[in-house]
Structures are given as C-alpha cells and as structure tokens.
Image (spheres, rainbow, N blue to C red):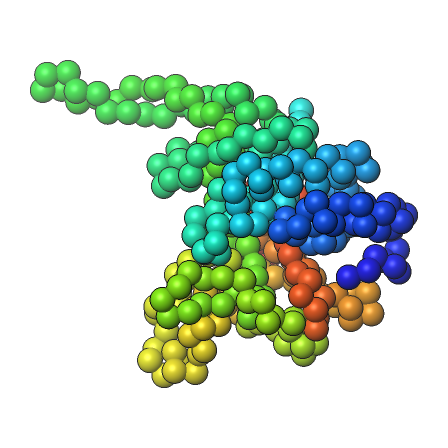
Length: 303
C-alpha cells in the first residue's frame, strides 16, 4: 500500500525507507511494519526515523539468526523510565507458540521465556505502570500458612516479582485476548501445518466491516463449544479459529473505516493500545500494541 495521502508529515521518509529496505526485510513483513508504525504515530506514539531504521535492520537479523519463518513487530509497552519494544518470531506452523523478544533500544534483542499459568498468577497482584527496567523487582506482601508442630498460623511474607516475568505474562494475556488476523489469511490442510494463505487477496469492503470476518490469532477456545449444525456451516480450511463477534464483553471492539474506506481499523477497548488494520481487497493487514500494558478492568461497567 502506498503512503500517499495518509496525512502524516513523514510520509516521504516511509516511502524512502520502504524502497531502501524492502528487499533486506523480505519475510519480515516490512510493509506491515511501516503501516503499523504510521498508525501508532497518529496516536502520538511514533518512532524517530533513526529508531524505525534500526528496527527494520535489527529485526531482519533476528529473523536470520533465529531462523524464523516470519518476524512480526508486536509493539511497544510504555514504561516510566524506558520502553519495551516487542517482536515475535513465527515458525512454519503459524499457530505454533510464537517466540517473543524484547529490546530497549530497537537494536539488541533478548529472548523471553514462554508464559506459564504460574507466571500469570504470580504477576496478577502487580498493578500500575511498568518501570521499563527488566531487572526491577516489585514487592508484594502476602499471608502464608506456617506449620509449627500441631499449630498452624499465618505470617506475612514479602514476595519479589521480577518485571521481566510480568512482561512475559502481560504479552501473553494481550495475545490471547486481542491478537487478530482476518478470515482467510491462514490456511489449514487436513495433515500439514497451518500456513499463510498465498491466495488471500483481502476481505471485501462489506466483509471488512464485520467482526465475524476476524479471528483471534491463537489456538481456538470457543470453537469446540459450537453445535454440529453450526460447525457444518464452517469451512474447516479457513474457519478453524475463534471469531471476534462473540467476544465478551460485547462491545469491546471499535470498528472504523478510515482514509475514505481504504482502511478498516479495529481498536480494543479491553486492552487500550491494541490497533489492528486491514486494507480491503489487498493483502495488507497487521496489528500493533502501543500502551502501558494495563487492562481496562472497568470496561464491563462502561458499556
């Protein structure tokens, strides 16, 4: 998609960067990255030209060094003293667990461990903003039962929780709740891995306005709860993920047509900062998260 008419002051830079780096960034979704950054810029969270160039170059190296099939720029979690830039590596099987990396400077990347339920439970007690320092430790006081002979009593224990652990957990929660992909972008064969659908030419304008045309980019959770009659209406090669139309709470997505119907933009109200875009009738789509990493727990009471 060309950047003309997008209304941002650095459109010329985008076009120049695209031409200079499109070959080097093959398989890194450079086109999607540039449009994602442009959308983030519109919300006041854009990157400087130097940072954008560093991002494109370094993620190309990440793709090569880790032998990923694709590398996606996931977004940016804003901290009080620094920001976390997040990228994810995708294997040949598009729904296999993604490898997540973070950087503090858009050049040097560190691999994060996989998320666990224990991490989510441990970090659920931490509230407020991220610091932006992976070595920072939060302190949480909790009551633990202690046995002394036949006596059982509770005592206060101070638990240390690393910010890096919280980072892993929050990224995983955002992925499960609001990472999106348009219907038809991925293809499932009866025996092979789930792959990118090379014949995908985009959603029609009417389809692009419907939440039912978008899926959660993860293994399905609700699909198994559908009746046999409902499943009979689905195409197993395309409809193998959960649709957004039944998300709870209802009304947690904002759908808008922008730039003269040239772009559909979905924004999450549950995780403010998550923006998904798709240019109807083209292969261009993607999402980016730029926010504080805090869930809008008040949303059910706001709708």
